[in-house]
Amino acid sequence: MGASLESAGLTKLHMRKFYCRGKDQPPLTDEEKKERDAALLTLAMTAKEFAAIQPIYSAVSAKGFKFFFDRMKSVTNRSDWALFQGPYELCAFDCCSLVDAWAIRIRLKPENTPIRIVFGRGNRNRHWLELGYKAEYSKKPDTHLSPEPLFEDDTNLLPLQAADLYAWEIARSYANRNEKRESLKILMEVKPLHHIWR
Image 1 (tube, rainbow, N blue to C red):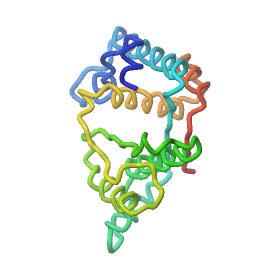
Image 2: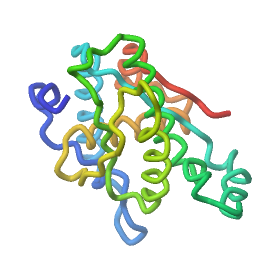
Image 3: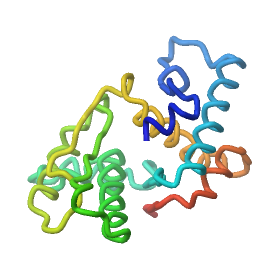
Image 4: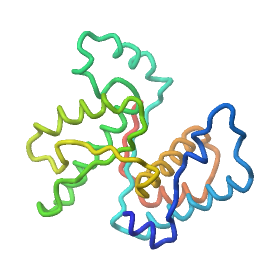
């Protein structure tokens, strides 16, 4: 995927400058907004052009499921419920399940497995995801995924930056349902594999 993005002229998609700003930092400038939107449009066109790129996402309402996630924090053995500790863990693991199902459906050749699942290492709840992932995929028969997830620095990995950008676009589409962004329209044409928790 990285090569496909680079061939489209994308070499830096890091979204921290766009949305991970502290309260003491100023809002985006008009120029930064234009830069973000241009990167989104290029990403969308790249996903549409390259058949090897299959967008996948999982979405859950953090507010709607707050009661459930709060209850999970008080269960006796939290490690048994590691993948239900919050929206990050739930959606991340759900995406893994979508990837595995996709690999089975297209009959991925054994020489192309296992699929290495890579997450950004910055999330403070990654230990729950890692614990739950290993419990599932280190024992699951006939899986196409590696038995352990990888956690990398997204400042140095273009596909992770693209995933951040894509996640931002999808989240924005749920927060602003009346907004018709060209990049989102193109991304939806690619027909992403997705699951929405309601």
